[in-house]
Image (cartoon, rainbow, N blue to C red; front, side, top):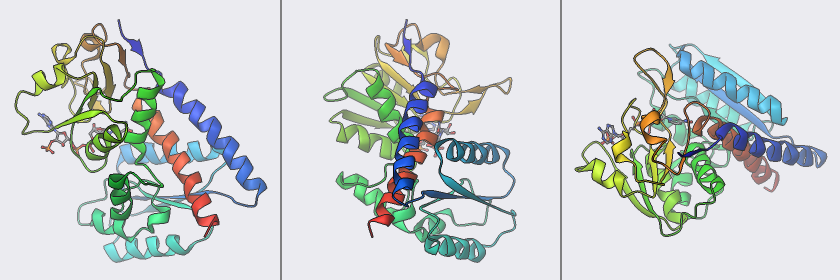
Length: 283
Ligand code: NAP
């Protein structure tokens, strides 16, 4: 039976360390601040934004919320980003995705000052991650690395399989595993023999966004299984990609949903905001 990786507890530890750092920075006259921008009324986005604000309060990070109506134009959004780029109280800017149809998300991300890009989605930061010399790591993949490390399993030399190749999870996830010297395979919707590939994984990370996607027969005995997926099942209950009841008896370690990757994503955002404040103070 797998050991459950307690993402909540590990995230709480990260946040304690961040709170300590924030106290130290404030003693030096540096106050980290995060601006969270939300456009429209997406209920899931509202929950994420509230959780991010609560996390800021808990660790002592100043936060500002900009809740804009769904009819906001591209120009209005870009001009807000411009103002936040110049605002000294703001060390990090996060634009909650998805944006309503008609807004160009990529252009918005590119407008963010790379030094305030705490999501690490800007092309500059993506490039730095490729090179392995980065200031910010994207929150979800960075959180996953922490979760894997918490098991004591060394990523070096292991067969790592990432299902999903999105810019925000799959691709950077694969890159971070590569930086840890994992042997990495990236799978996607055109991958052939997906189950066979997964069965060879010592470390399996699923970021697909489909409930019941990873079944027990796809899990190698003893593997570390990380479930990034956040889905609703037939009964509207929050669940991951992994069929937990089938995978848990086979895996060595496994993350639950909820309580696995989700809390780590927010903890890493707090870490990035502190890193951004340090960076700007050093300018
Ligand atoms: P995405 O942009 O929709 O990407 C999904 C990926 O899954 C794509 O690369 C897609 O392949 C692949 N895929 C879809 N069907 C597949 C299939 N049948 N076989 C193999 N691969 C398949 O999603 P995302 O933004 O990366 O997010 C993925 C999941 O993680 C979602 O549930 C999201 O809610 C969750 N998430 C959680 C957190 C957290 O903090 N816990 C953070 C971010 C995202 P193609 O590229 O070929 O289409």
